[in-house]
Length: 386
Image (cartoon, rainbow, N blue to C red; front, side):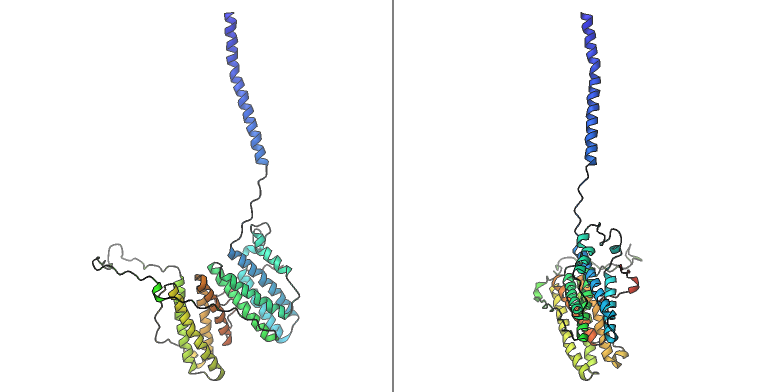
């Protein structure tokens, strides 16, 4: 009995590892089945990313510009003579604007117009669909109203968009508003009004912090010697990136110089040209005060006024053309301020860019399709025709 019992116990002990192996195999099999099951369950598609406001504003501007371009081409094809030239100029203007607004990815896979791309519902495709849905037979009043409405919307979007895009939207909007007025005047259509300029912002002189002078007892560090160890051959510090202060400084200097140019031109102009120059001189004097006021708001130093400026002989011989050149020179200055400012200062810069382009036209200068931007059209992408 004793021997049999011992054998019986040994058999049980030898069977236990087999049972553990079976349990482990079953557990691993169950884990494998569950893992494969979870892997085969498709994941939910992520929500499309909402595009930034600047991209939405660009896509909206592109879609509306393309729609207005189509209407302008239709009117140009059905017109002749001076009207055809006017409509053709509108087509050219809108074509250049659209090329400036389009991105290379807009017409390719994964671009803003690709339905499978994230944010396409609020990107170029959605905007194009909205524009197509509102398209109507082209008429001159409809085109004038469309250009005016689009221009105003671009200026509104420019108030909030990122710096570079704000500048482009302000340029596109200004040109569209002025083209709407030119079309209206040439066709006898009521001329649309321009947006009202914001009231200039001013501040008290004591609102800016006064720099604290060093204590009389504090040691004043000696200036660094140019031959100090480690400084020999050192390159001068590179200028930092442009700032709002720099842009305001340029505006003040440019407007002061423009005032001087008008004062000189008035001594050489007669008749209606002199009257126009006199009224615009007062405008520029007010702009100097406004620019200095915004400088004080931001505690920016106001540059001193120079006693005079050098004017070329061509300006003295043809003062009207010289004033046109001066007005055109203010456009990129205000464009810089649009890109580098925000809030009330940017709204003032946008309005000033528009009125500067209008003054350029009054003196016979063409501010171009994107006033305030020096544009090389050969570098612009082609439009996605279709």
